[in-house]
Length: 284
Image 1 (tube, one colour):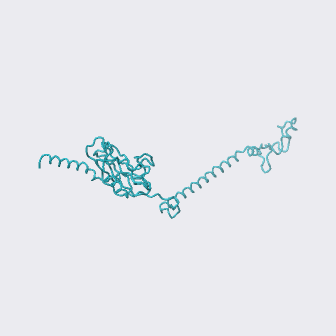
Image 2 (spheres, rainbow, N blue to C red):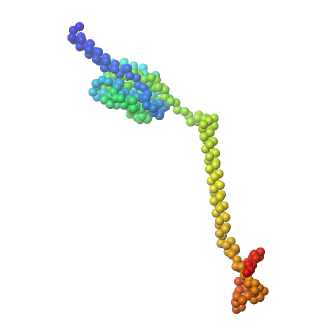
Image 3 (tube, rainbow, N blue to C red):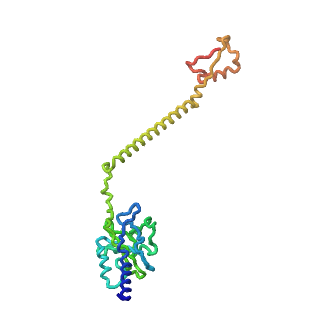
């Protein structure tokens, strides 16, 4: 074998290794324990770290998000192209999943230099559908609700031509939204633990309410009794001026009475100031 044939063989071998390197990788769900890893219209994937381990200046990694039934449609579009074409123009997002569309779209993940072989790569993730119902041709929009989807990573050069690609992921069924009217909110839908907890809380609330009323009644009744005991009317009515008689002068005139003011004394010596009946007169 001459030198030129050997050089050609080595060149073909290097090109085959370069273009076939990403085919062994298959996109998969993120290994991180995240809430909402799969929803009705979004999916969290493991980023393409160490997938396209090759030198490609200015290359970028993109993601094909498609209905699982459209995998062959994308592959056919790429294979039947007579010359390199811009894959980003195949199926723009806003109409990607219409009835007459190709049922896939392409969105950017990031530059190739941003996804090296890194031990911390498992701590990161890429959410498909993070931009919601967007309007850009290649935006990261949501997927059709409750559909079955698949994904493929692409390596594109500066002219948006495909340099390399991964395999398709496994089919991933999205969750189906449930009609709120169909949710059983009755007692049968409650678990035994929930019924016990609700019962305990109701009994505790009833006891607290009863205790509150008891404390309120005690405070009110005590205040009422105290106010009656110190009522000015009761004090005035309870104060009586007893009349003291000296036994030696009993039955006679009172030496301490001023005869000149007897008329005034009689006016003030009424039943309101003298002891009431039933109260005995203290005697010395």
